[in-house]
Length: 302
Image (tube, rainbow, N blue to C red; front, side):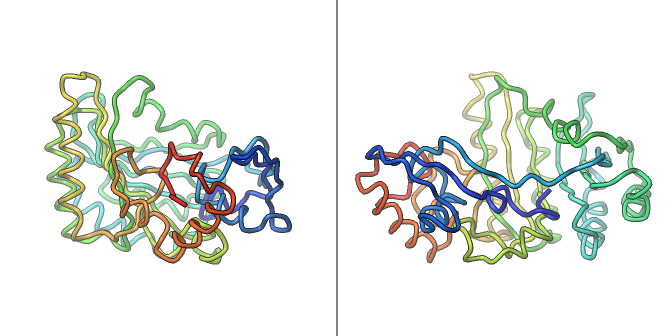
């Protein structure tokens, strides 16, 4: 929904916060504005949010699903995809995913969520649905709540996970080749490499209006190792780390804080906020949690 309505934190109106010393504060655009700014992207570094007010937009039916291509067509598909996206409406959200299908096919999927009916989506989605053509077109009209659950079977509770991430401006030919090669090397059939599109309202919000920083980026890359056998922990973690190292020439330093793992160095946490915002967040931290009581997180040390 970020093309239409921005980031989740852009829709927060106020929060009740219990601080480290037990104070109960209201944070909003009118009260404790520095805390309100920090909460929207800085996470649980400043206190415990016990209630919040949030802007909910009305959402009707959506047109959503997957287009699946054999992985050997990934270069052609992603080249088309990156040229297709500019100019598409804010109510279209897409992702590209390297994965293995349940029947064992190495595949590239384009995940589509269009906010509107099947008839509403027809002119926008026609070029995407006819290119290739795909091996499978699983797009249909459904409630938003159903679309929200489309990926749930791919990441079941109880599996073992490790991930790495970065933002990027463009899906270059070099990046496509690296992702294709690395996806084929995954030791687990459940692992994925995802490219999330960013556009529209999330990019139009003022960059300095909240701690969340990534208003100028066009894509977020997530490398998700997903496996079941603890005996293969090392191989799967190594695959994710080596894939992340291989993509570094094609990505930006910035990273989404919710996609950091527990073993990230301090410079990666700084990269999640940007240098200027990190210093501002430290000031808010010193004010509301000077002893770093809330530290079991992607920590902003006071």
